[in-house]
Length: 138
Image (tube, rainbow, N blue to C red; front, side, top):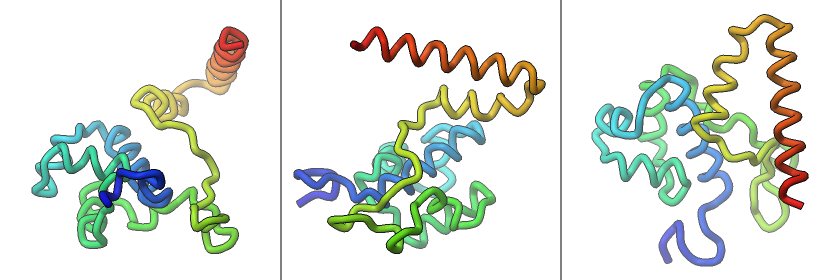
């Protein structure tokens, strides 16, 4: 059975590591083709890594960490350490499981540049918009 197929789908840790690769890539301004060229891979392979459909080998994760100039542990940050990071049924427990998008990453990258006052205003705006979206969905 393929890693990304079937009822189980990608392992939660593979998804988490892939998401961390995606977040870092976007925050540094690289696209999937840029990362692929640096690693000798196609952008399709990078897509599969980022979705968790293909596991990233230890040596390739090492290469990615060197390219991004981060410690290899960066990719595992956010995994809940309770129970060695594994919940019931072998699934990893995460501190968060929100979808990282180019927009959420860009907002988090730009927010520290704002004054405290403007950060508070931006937060109020985002809260208001998210509450309206939740109300609209009802």
